[in-house]
Amino acid sequence: MPCRLPSPVTESSNIHSAIKVVSVPRTGGGGGLPGTTLVFDENTGMTRAVVNSRALTALRNAAGSVLATQLLGPKTPTHLVLFGAGLQIKQHARLFIQIYPTITHCTIINRSLNDRFTELLADLTMEFSSLHLEGIISGAQDIEPAVRGTDIICTATSSTQPLFDSTWLKNGAHVNLIGSYTPAMREADVGLIKRAGRQIVVDEAKSCLVEAGELIDAVITENELIEIGTLVHAGAAEAVERVKQAGNVTVFKSVGVGAQDVAIAALLVELAEKDGKVGTRILYD
Image (cartoon, rainbow, N blue to C red):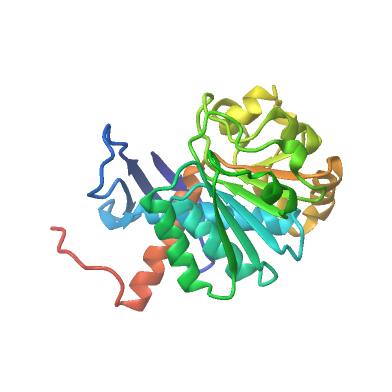
């Protein structure tokens, strides 16, 4: 997935080009580096850095969810519900809990009891000892009370069926849908789109129209999608308010944007080069 940012990431940075390569092994894998981003030198074209894109993608997605929630969601949430148990969910939990000190209760819902799930709960319990952390197995336990009581939901699964009933959500709740990226995948039902007044904030409209199963099911149109980039400018307050008033919940849907991968990889490389102690320098030629 090659991409180039035509403008600098920061005021002091340069234009950047990068390629992100992701492999999906037929088996479970378990080793190696499944995702790699190559950042190139704009002057020479040589490889400037090789970056672990799996870790960066998880952080970038969590940052996008936090941004959407800050724009659209409740200002003082107390309960966070997360669906999934992978690195994406771990970064979502860490970022949300750090940025929203009002969150005192976090529920993580996974479809099965496995090592990844138990390790995630153990890691978060150790990192956030004062947090009320709860783990639920969706196939064996009732998830409705958790969904009804939450202020924010984040989903990062490969599910092909809705993860929860949208009628359970209380008014004012915010949902970040991060996992699905094909027409066959969906993490929410059509009812959620209706409850949001069919005004859905997305990372990139054209991609979401053809890749997001939830939006395809709802027969959403491009004029019903609002790209998050249009809501972060100083003059966007009215547009944000229109989205919030369109329904009784708000929704952010992300399928991934190459420009975000370039931006976060380039920023990391710039900070590493400035620090001088991060990463390993290798003679290239």
